[in-house]
Image (cartoon, rainbow over all chains, first blue to last red; front, top):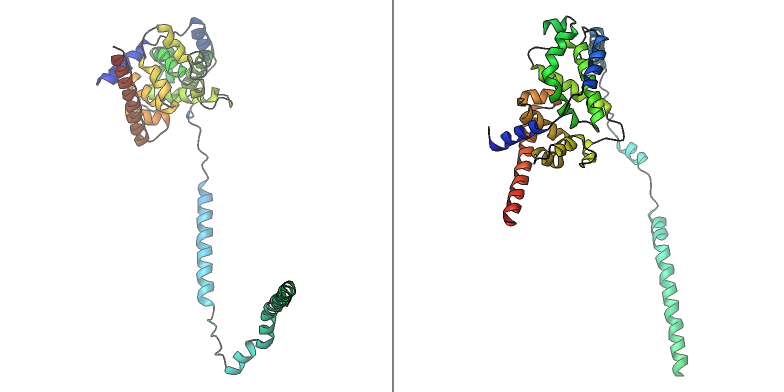
Length: 131
Length: 173
């Protein structure tokens, strides 16, 4: 035993505690009213009945079988080959000109406003210098 | 043991006679007051007698008793007192009070301050009660690896503390 372990042991023994007579009597009196039981001290774990495990296992197996049967009995559906006319009908026609005008409209307005500002500023400068 | 299992109070009392002081000393480290530790000891004795037929002789009797004691001490902890460590000042800690009464230097004072409740309990069971790692694991409901690691940590913490105390005293001459 090493030094630390020895010191810990010695120091533990130095701690003085007394079981008082009063406590002794209390314990003795309590024990008189107790009879040993056959059950374990540890709280019994809640055991599910064996039937529960069988039922859940059978349910699982039944579900797996059902899935396998459904997957295997279903006929695969061949996808229809698309014809050129059906593709044309499916694709929406886009009005490119309208789209362009719609997108460029705000920019054009901004440009006009800027040009107008420049012209106004030019006029003011001309007036200021007396041209 | 067989007489106690048959229901003899006297046989049981004789069986646990040598454990009462040790258990009370241990319970002082797990309870908020001396009175609580005494109550826990009483509850432990009652539980041990009531369930003595379920005692498995493959384990040491002390391991079984300490396991019951720990559970009973835990039951007495009020919700406000989550960690006994919160009470670790000399005035309110029952174990430290007992150590202070003996008026000698004691390494367990440092252990009480440095270690958590669980590590302290593991250290106590190992070094004060001479329990094996396997028994401590069983008593504290922890794995053997947890017990080994925390015993090592506890030792290191105490070693470091002892070294620093020694260095300080040397520095002061």
